[in-house]
Length: 210
Image (tube, rainbow, N blue to C red; front, side, top):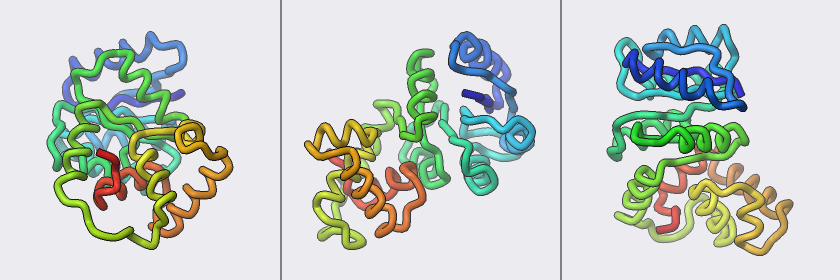
């Protein structure tokens, strides 16, 4: 997979480039120190994934992620940041990030996240996952949103946990084809474009499993 690293701290950025360059499945095609430069680099290099910091000068990671998704929807963004507060997490997910890691993640954690997101799934650091669960359990709305059925909610909860269709099928004892049907119905009813939006939707509505 082709990856671009975006971080305003030179030492961190160069360290990530070095680490990712050692992974056989990763080709680092460039790095940038802010969101504006990242957008130009993405246009030139057409990466599969952008590893994105959040707090940067000129254009922060949230705005950069939003613009990446608008201009390059085929490019996936994985956030790698020091911050794991509610506001930062939700802002990144709403902007379209498919993964969220904190900077205490190990090299193999980053590699796993990139591979997972490259397959079209989502990946969240355990710390971030706990924060999302905490947000979801503060207030659970009554009733089912957007006419979703209980089974569709089951599927959505598992999507929010980062499960693949095959894993969902195994856990719910249904076929993978049935899972795809449920996923398509969830997306249609809730007006969702992809699994990243589904994760945000699940936590916003308190659907995610505690």
